View 1 (cartoon, rainbow, N blue to C red):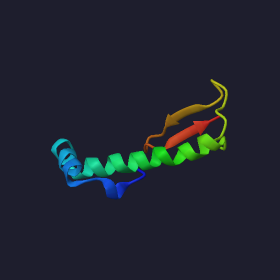
View 2: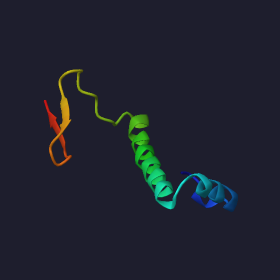
View 3: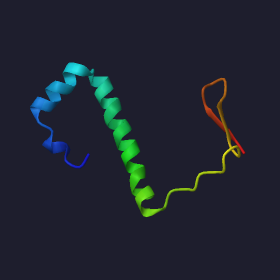
View 4: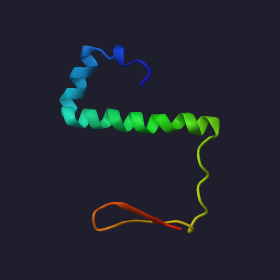
Amino acid sequence: MTDPGGIGAELRAELHRHFTRAQIEELVLDMASWSQQKIQVCLGLDADAPPPGSVDFDFDERGSAVISR
């Protein structure tokens, strides 16, 4: 994440032995997404979690998230 230019041909070849191009792209996007929130957590700017049982999380028939409090 901090030095993408430092990824050499050997590591790229190793990745392609185990993953398809689409899987590598998904892994990179997942890492970028999860890494981005760490800054907020470190600075204490992340939202407090609601108390257990106060939020009901489910999916509707189209697969969209439905959250009720």
